[in-house]
Length: 85
Image 1 (cartoon, helix red, strand yellow):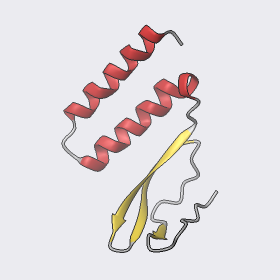
Image 2: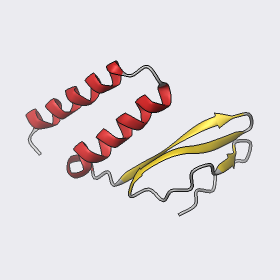
Image 3: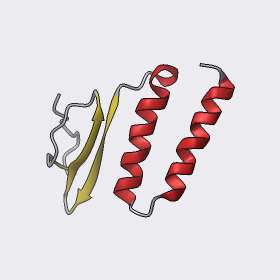
């Protein structure tokens, strides 16, 4: 991918971030755009967004190649989080 094209896609992604008022929706939009627009340039195949709830991280959204376990909880007090898939 040419550097000029990469920056245009990045600018489009940042514009989308600016238009959103909901944090989770904004992050989900960013994730979708990163996977769609930068798959080749950065080698991205998917991703996940976790939200901290009390002592756990809960999977709220997954994109593309990421294994989807929505609602999965991971205890944040453990030394290492075991990710499924």
